[in-house]
Length: 186
Image (cartoon, rainbow, N blue to C red; front, side):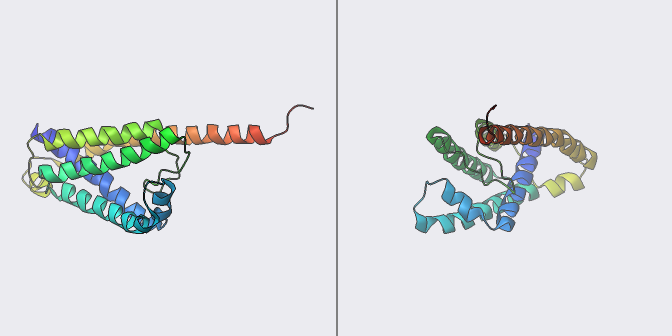
């Protein structure tokens, strides 16, 4: 079980760190937060700064192995916040960009499901024993570099599949928009 926790913590760490960094680089995350229409205007900018910073801190802590249950529960809490924001806007019928990473994809039930899955993985990892510091695990041969590479090669197709499905959905959405704009048969 300790290996499971290590793999999950490492994967979550990569996801959170990359997501937070991309949001900070993107610079327009404040407008993404505003589009959800869940906060008063005065809170949009502070929350838009705090969320990516929290993601980066949690990601770094998970990656370097400071994966205390509290850190994993904090990751679960952020996923819960994202899930609730997406759910509220899906139920409202809003078709807005998610604001995740550098993506321009719209919120969707699949994105909601991904956030719920990440939340559950975070909770499961928090409730399982941890191996400790990842660098120590690599250094002492507990986790061989080829194992870490195998995990990344396993997760890469999942990421690619999600990206392909998002691109297909976006193509269908654009095709429908073109159909609506094109004149009917004469």
